[in-house]
Image 1 (cartoon, helix red, strand yellow):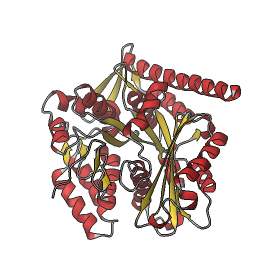
Image 2 (cartoon, rainbow, N blue to C red):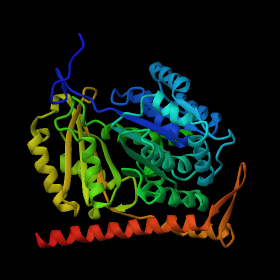
Image 3 (cartoon, rainbow, N blue to C red):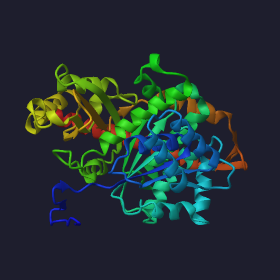
Image 4 (cartoon, rainbow, N blue to C red):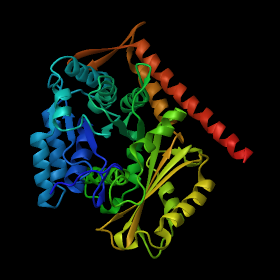
Length: 437
């Protein structure tokens, strides 16, 4: 018998699922998305996933890196499935190299020409999703170049109807000036494109801070290190989409992730994760402090203007003692009063049948002061090394010279600096509000 939906949007016997999807351009995004899809097998995502790249070899390389490290045969089958049905190549097959303009030019050619990516987005069921996670690294050419443009174009052309959450992965300082040149421009284009807000929420993750979150003594080589780092991102994503399912006391709707950021004009967030806390030994407040100490991007947590908190607990502990909804809200409200300036707070408690004696916490701190000063230094140093005329900067690309107008670069710098200044103004208003109280 097919269940029917009632007027409250609830299926008989369970809360209706919120549909999510994933678009992952570039090798870094390909690895994270394929790992998440094959190991979490989350019904909120189902098969609404698309891996795209400018080179077939890079997608296959990403799949191989995951396949070699996952243990279950089911995961390997799922990987084979998405490699057959959920990938797309765009551009001229030459790859994008390491400059974002090459990746952006390639995806523009696709949207204005063959439209293979546009059609594939519809084919895998992403068009009508209320929420799409766009996952990519900001240091390279393919993901950083195509990711912000895909968000902009799919929203502008109404190819996708839902909100876009960009999980943007920042390069390590040791990666060099070219990577940070891409990252600074990538962040600017995620924030604003063609004079409009682009991504609805940008979740910033630093590879440097990700590396600190794993136990190096258990790492077996470079690829295993990145695999474990990507597992942390998968944990973040799993927790973020947990509200909206039946295993949740309170539903954080998609609009709850986007309404206040849009209203404040401050729509970046930093994730903080605390995993595997012993239910009997670790208090909730201690887990919250631990999460902030493990923030995945350099920032000043106190300056956060909003926060989303998601707790995942064992089923047997769900709604009991500290994890009773009113109690956990009280504990979290008291903690937030002491640790952030913002008054916008959302809380959800979810349960997992596989957890036995531990609980996990995800904090998304919205609008904190982020520290990208070192990246800016490397950006400026690298920019000085480029061949620069009065109107254009010439970049070496795989398909020949890439022309980047000086005006474009100036606009990107201006947009990012204006956004950071606006963020500071919002924080000042929040602080004044606190003092009045």
